[in-house]
Length: 564
Image (spheres, rainbow, N blue to C red):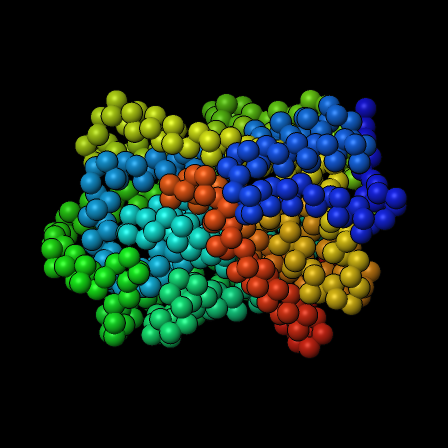
C-alpha cells in the first residue's frame, strides 16, 4: 500500500496549507516560549497536533503517521539522546573526581575575564567538537563547561547555542555538505566552496555578537582584539580549507587555528578590566583569584585528560575510515563487525510507502524509511567510552562509574522523552508533507527567492534539529526553484546549509540538550526566548548576503563545471 503526498490540501491554496502545516511548530514553540509549559508536555502536544493535521488535513493513513512518529522517536533516542547521555556522563565523572575544579582554575589562569572564557569555550572549542561530532554534542559539552566556570545556567545554555552557529554547516566532518551533494546531484567541491564564501563573514561576526549578547556593546568593544582574533582566524581558515580541500576538515582546522591564535594573543594582550557578571563583584573575583590554588603542570594535565580523550575519541569516531570499520566495513570489504554493529530495520508500513511528487522532487519518488541502529559508531558511544576511560584513569572503579552513569540517566530521563517526542513531530511532518508545503511557500517568492532561500534552510533546521536533515528535506527543492528562476543552483543549495546554521540555536532538540547540560530542565522556554531573536536576525543577514551574491556580486559563486 502506498500513499502520495499532497502539498496544498486546504482548498488547493498553498498559503492556507502552509499556515495549517505550521500549526504543530507554533504549538510547540508557543507552549515553550509563552505559556511556560514543561518541554516534554509541549513536545507531546506538538506531536499530537502534527498527527491530527497529517491524518485529518493531509489524508495520511493513521498507521503510516504513527509509524513515522515511532521512527522519529527512535532516532531521537539514538543517536541524539545517546549523545546527551554520553556528554553529561563525561562531565559528571570530572565533577565527581574534583578534576573539573582544577580545569576551571586552569582556564581562569589563562583568562579570568568571562568574555575571553566564552570565546575560548563557547566559540573556538565548541567549533572543534562540532567539527568532529555535531548533532548537539558541542552544546551539551560547552554548556556544561561554562556552568562549571561560573556562568549562570540560562546564560550558559543560551550562549552555548549562540556560539554553535558558524561551524554547523561543516560539522561532523562535513556531513551536511557531503549529504547535500548526494541529494542534489551537484558537485561537492562547488557546494563546499559556496558555503565557504558565505559563512566566513558570520564566523568573524559571531564572536562580537556573542560578547555583545552577554555583556553589552561597551564591554564588547573592550575585547575587540580577542573577538577579531577568534573570528578572523577561524573564518580565514574556514574559507581556505572549504575552497581548496573540501568540507571534511574545515571545522577541525578552523577551531585549532582559532584556539592557538587566541592563546598567542593573550600572551601579549589582556583586557584592561576584568569583566564579571552582575552577581559577581570585583572584590569577590579578586578574592577568588587570590585564594585560587596553584596547580602543578601534572595536576593541570590530569584535569585536561578527559577533554583531550574526548577530542581524540570524537575525531576517531567521526573519521570516515574509522566509521566504516565500526560499521562493519565498506561494501565488499566487510569485517567481523558486519551485521553486528549496524542493524538496518525497514520501518513496517512506512518504508517506500510514502511517495514524494513534483515540484518537491523531479519525479515521483517513494521515501525510504529505514531505522539504522548503529550503536557502536554513534557519537554517543565515543562520549560514553571517553567517560569510562577517563573515570578509570582518574581512579574510579567500574562499580562507581556505573553509579555515576545511573545518576546521569536519572537526570536526563525527561529530556530523553522530550527529544524523542520532538523528533517524532519532525518525522511526522516530513513523511506527511507538512515540511514540503512550508518549503514550497518559501520557494514561491520569485525575485525575492535569494533572500528566502536561506530562511528555508533555517526552517528545515528548526524543524529537524539538523543541518544535514534540512539539506535532505529542502536541497532538491532549492535546486529546482533556482533553476526555474534562472538563478545558480549552487548558490541556492549552499544558502540552504548556510541559513540552516542560524536555525540550530532555536530547534527544540538543541534547546533540550542545552537545558539538560546546564540543569535547566523545565526552563526550556526561557532558553528559547533568550536566543530566538538572535536566530531571526542572523538568518535574515544570511538572506541579505545571498541577495547580494545573486544580484550584485555573482563572481562570488563558484563556476558549475559539471552537474551529475
